[in-house]
Length: 404
Image 1 (cartoon, rainbow, N blue to C red):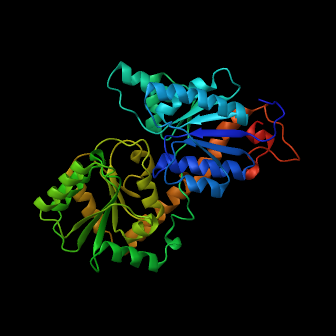
Image 2 (image 1 turned 120 degrees about the horizontal axis):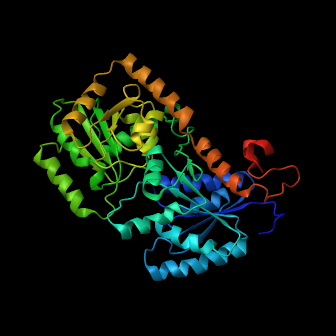
Image 3 (image 1 turned 120 degrees about the vertical axis):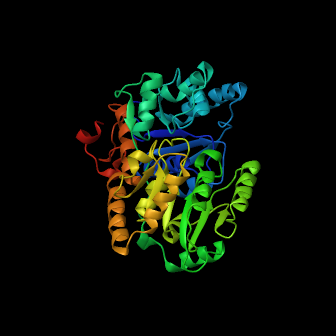
């Protein structure tokens, strides 16, 4: 690396650029880097959101970094090293395990720093799996998206606070705010979902995979005897046809066909939240963070979630939502009924607390600022400002603040 280089070059690596919290965070950081005067590169196997990078001025390079094939991973090492050298990359930031292995070895014998983000407490079913997962813990800095994930890293990979940086995910408050949603958007969505007039809507956003707890919700709905209740499950089965079939059969067996609807996708989640009366996240396994509880609170909606994982850190128990025993339909039903029983004044008070809580702790700007601070830690003393502009200048930081 040229010691007098004035433009930091940051390369993020993620398997694909599709829907999901990790992918959104990757794009958000790229946008902030470009706005701050840095060059942002994203390496992925492509996906539906690649076009967004052109709009923000980031560079996308297509490589099969999603592959777990040892041969492909080895080829990726060579390709990534060439990219590092060609673009004079200062920092390589890996966001998933398979590409993390390639990125780790690609950085060897170069001047590029290597960092990672751990998005989940990956399952450890044996020594081989633990070793495979360890790529995410090899960074000079390892970003954990929650205290739950940080504890996982400390327990399983002996990382300490000198290496771990806690950076929760953040959401764009300008998008996830009740005043940002027009009545027309809500009406259009209600019509497309064929929501009955006057219905109280229980909503579960989340891809159709078993651990998201759809079956728990269906069993809970059977226990709630209200004619005005309507449930919308939002998410793609991503090829899990058998599980989707199981859910359809469960809905039919409970006699809930007219009260539960599964929709494959929603392009307007803020409007979806505004339609909901209560949002639920009954995951059977703990999530590393969980965007849905944060988005729901930002929209002022009551949230009911399983009492484990990241939800424990984003929901204020008894103030902005309910945390219930996982895999317990009876507890879920009781919490939903409590949420439905809120008076207009109580709902307004809950909404105010929830919105203030998210604005204070989980915004996109906070996430980006803290991530750029991690980059600055590694670049300290290596970047010389030019024309009075500091690297990552958008936050108007001084040398003393950034350490640059």
